[in-house]
Every structure is written in C-alpha cells, then in structure tokens.
Image (cartoon, rainbow, N blue to C red; front, side, top):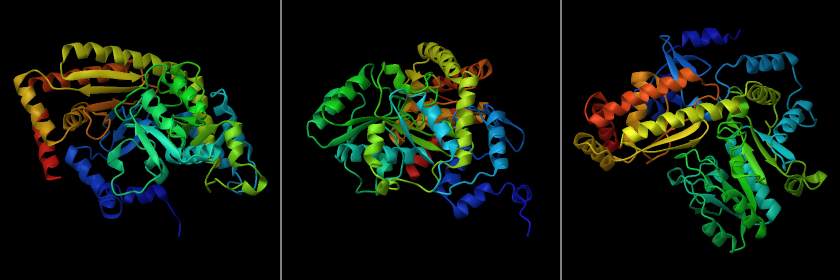
Length: 458
C-alpha cells in the first residue's frame, strides 16, 4: 500500500471539525462554531491565513507567538528541506551531533552570563526543566510565582501558573506561592521563610499583558541571591525579539537571570522546540558525574529538524532585523491606540512592549453602551472583549484573542514581520469596531447578547 498524504487530505477535505468533535476535544469545534471562528484554513503566508474560499485573514495571533518570522518563511522551509535530505542519524541517544551545539552556541551568544542549554520540545517542558534545576541547585522545594503568570499546563508548570482557572481538579501540585507581579515586599516575605528555590516570572506577562515595574528584576535577583534562591525569566512567548529586545528582561537594565526559558518562535513555525538556558554552576549541579548523565532527559531533545528550524529562525530574526521591526511597528501601533484611547472612553488602557500589546476595556459613558456593558459584566467578565475579538474577525478578517479568562483585555501578537499595511489595517478596523461599540446598538451588540445567553447556559 502506497501512502499519499495529499490525496488523503484532499479526499477528507472539510471534515476537520467533525473529526475533532468525534475523536479529539469536542468543546473546541463547539466553541468555534458559537463565535463564528469555524473557518477552514488551507494555507498561511507571512502575516496572513487563507481559507478555502481564498479569503485572507490578518494573523494578529501568530499561533500564540510561534510565527515570529511569519508563516511559510522560505529560509526556514529550505533549512528543513536540506535537513531532510541530509538523512541525519537522529536520536541515536549516544552521540553528540554538532547541530545541537551550534544552536546552543547561537542562543547563548544572545544571553550573556548563561553558559549551558537543555533542549526539549515545548515551553512547558522548558519550564519543567527550570523548576527541577532550580530545586536541585538550591536544595529547596518551593517556587514563588506571579499572579496571572502563565508557564504551562503540565503538572510542574501548572504548580506555578498564576491563572487559577487552569488548576481546578488537578491538585495536589508542587509547593508554590503566588505573589502580586512586581511586589518586592511580598517576595522578601516569602524568602525569609528559607525554603524558596526560585522566583519564576514573565517580564511581560502574556495574560493581561502586564509588565514588571522598572528596577524590579535586578532588585529581585539581589534579594533572591541573598536568600540562596534563583531568578527564572520565562521568555517562552515574549523572547526572541517580540518586545523589541531579544529578551524582554533586557528592558530592566543589565540584569542577568539564573535561568531563562524559550520556545514558540524558536520553532520557526514548523518544528516544536523549547530550551532552558542556565549557568554552568546550576547545570553542573544536576549533571555532576557520569552516572547522572540521564538524570534529566527526554527522548526527543535536540532532534535535527528542530535544531535546523531553530538555527534558521535565529538567522531570519537577525538578517531581517525583526527585533528592530518589532520595536518600530509596536511603537506605531501603541501610538495609534493611545490616540484612540483619548477618543473612546471604552478603552481603559493600552500597554505593552514591541509587538505584544494589550488593550483593556472599561465601562463606557453612553447610556445604550453602558446598559450593554452592564448586561455583559453581569453574565461574565470578559464577554465584551470577546465581542470585540469576534467583530474584528467577522467584519475585518483580523484574528486576535482575549488575553485571559475573566479579563476585558484583547492581545495583539502579530508576526514580527508586519509593516505599514498591517498597522493601518488594524487601526482602521479597530476604529470601526469602537464606533459601533460606543453607539451601544447594532449587529455587534446583537452578537453580544448571543454570548450572554451562551455564558448563562454554561
């Protein structure tokens, strides 16, 4: 029997939602049908997705930050094609392929003070590695984490997840303590108890797009080291240029974390890969002798296709100036949105760094809009933001997301390749949505009532 992938997919075209409902997560197609996101995408290129009818959708979600270099980047595709042709002796498990060392070398060149890398297959695995290494190196068991922080959904990562809605029913978890983001007093109080291994923090949080205050990271590191604990910076979503710096912690001076986690953009949008970067001292505390060679490992670490994707992604980020473009386009979007904030009282706040931007909504002043707002808040906090996301998608074919459960915040995380066209497209679309929302009537609010009914049923 000859396997023919294109023929198989052509024969079963259009069955994706039915197959998912039958064999995978049935709530996914149900949700997508409800909000009108049930499109059949057939390809992606650059900053756009295309459906079966040929319609283009501006991708301001970029796979939760995966597509820093855009979709179907030719350099990354060629690197993967070359890697396939090379027929690597992959995963022999007892060799030292140079492609792993080359990617580690290039990553560490971007992270002064860090000297070793552990490769894995995802962001949550990178965080799991960071937690294990921190606990082993310090001999302590408890991790401090920030409210609303998101570090993954596997058991260890979930233990330090500050989005409590993900934890229900999955305990007991590892010992950890949540503190407000950027609260040095709360951190010091926990450190005085003497059992803290590390603080894990996203310098720019994905949930809600909240940032650590200036000066927090270096002061936190000093406190942590004073008490024999470590600083872990989670750069899984915001690292590799998204904030307009290669790492988001670079905004806080010359701070050098003890451990850094990366993933998402390192994949080039093709092959999942994660990495934990740390110091030789911490790394060597785990791999302290030959009999501990496998004390922390994963079968698929450092696969050649993943390494090739990572090397190509880093090359594209550097060669095309994507870090600088993220800073420039982010500033343009922030300026445009800040100007609109002065016009629309529905916009409570605009915040972010580079091309991770949060737009927070608040109670409007108009009578009709105020009544609609109250209706949604009573049913479920976050429905207004969902209404904006759906309206941007259905009217203007712009894909965005609500930035967290029970948050009136939408998040923009487009590819770092966007230009004037995409900035203008989003600005004009957002004005149209805000004009409608401010009136408090029309198709947008009709859909809002549908969301309210759905929330009440759930």
